[in-house]
Length: 200
Image (cartoon, rainbow, N blue to C red; front, side, top):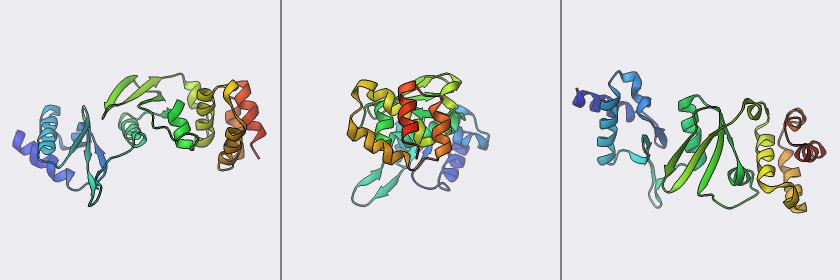
């Protein structure tokens, strides 16, 4: 049974595009037991076909001849986990600032708001925290305006500098006006005022 599961998992894995993030339930469709699939993935890791990113999270690696294995970003890993769990995510804090280009700092601890189960995952020494939040946070419509709200919450009202406001103004040009207006109603008053001022 274990040998059969291993062959099935390996054959299916080889059909995937390299760079894909793999979970045990990726192979649930094969009908093998969870234990058999996990043992198969462990064996494939030992053979070098998979790279273990964290407990129950693997990478079917894409390799560059000069760099070696091309690892996914924390954002890619978080999105893959959210897709698996059919959950929604909102990056917060320094991560939101990093995505917007407001910070070059690569945080060791990344926090995402989610409507799924809260948990912490260690990926190569970096901690991804999924923090369950209320549904109000997921009522925003714009991807960019949502990130801007989270970035401002991290910066704080008293620490907003003119150069940051200028960057935000340019960033918000990529967001739809109606999304900014809608999302401003869900933000703290001081952030709402900044959003509406830069909605044009």
